[in-house]
Image (tube, rainbow, N blue to C red; front, side, top):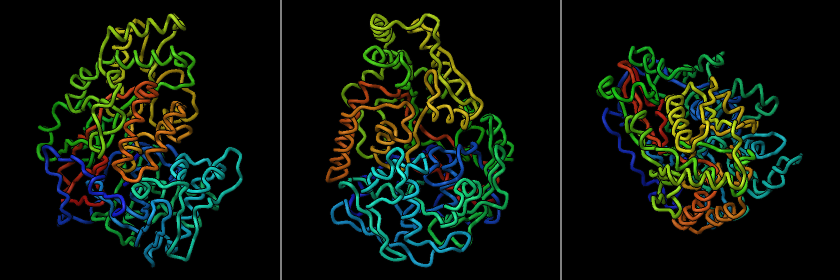
Length: 544
């Protein structure tokens, strides 16, 4: 998941130069609305994959909830600019050693104090191998991570974290890193109360956070809804301006769209394909259509024998060139996406649309077929094998675009290809995490923080938590490390783009298109605004 969400040292003006201009409807967001602040806002969501623990939440369904019930050292405004939350100051002279002071007097929703230990203990818990947290790799920069994260390790304290007093702690990184401060608003870096460690699984079902909202009593009805109410103990910049947020778990995006049309759902964060042709007229001044830091891809796992070695590389390239991305964008998404030419997002500083090797992302049926034939000469594709693309079909447009993509692959390569449907996102992620796929899978990324690295390291670094296909290339890893060690964000971005040249050759995933958010809302709400990462600013929404 998401998602970076201070920054004098890293020159954030450059880092956060984005083009998130909304088109169409009014998005409010001036923070001066005088609407009904008692209304409970209803919004769509998917069932979170896991319990609500910061270091174990790495998908959008859980991320939406976590970002409302927790807050970290910093948060991000509508354009991705960092805003201090619990941080009083974050200081460094060398981008390797940091002194972090937190505001005193802040508490969790149960009244227990938020201290330096709340952060240090949570980060150590998230990093330790024995706790098997999906976001553990976010702590790999910290000195001592290697020891606590090693397979079978029983260690649980990183050498690079030290508590000075109740409001001060220090962080020593293994090396200087150009974008460390940018990460500190991401979910993995949230603090935890001491009560979380007594029974983490139970805590994840009924978490105690410190954000603008808290989970209502019996608020999580699995596969049905998640109800949040304002947290009266929260004193930060994202104070709730409504009576709460209730997420309804939808298995049908069309049903969600109909619910907004009938004013029974207040906010829908992604219009389904069935509504893309008419949503601007259906909702008039109650829609948004804007780019955000996200992309769509298709993962082809490296553990599948047909996609290993030289033949496997050629097959991945052939599949990429067999896909007519623009046709799918035009026919299914009515032009509301942008064709991809690398692995990150155009809204990020440092983006380049001219990385050498990106011809492999261009539609060329003849070249695709020729490459597939060459691969067959090395290692024949089994005649009865079907190239499957696994996807949940409860998401907006997944079934339609993957069916179209499979048909293109089948036609242009002369093989059998089809959608392998599963009922829910949670079910799909379980298959991915167990490395139980027998073919490709639908994938994509919504930025954690506004950095090119966030689209590269977490997804393609060896052993990274969101590396769904088990991709590993030591040359790529070394280039990423070089980029992180750069003396400036700009120098780091140049090296991150060089690392993409390696990805364009290996194609651990097939990039498809850059994302844009098409969101709509009911007649019952005001002040709806979507952020740089495509997520509504729920706390700003009021009733009419």
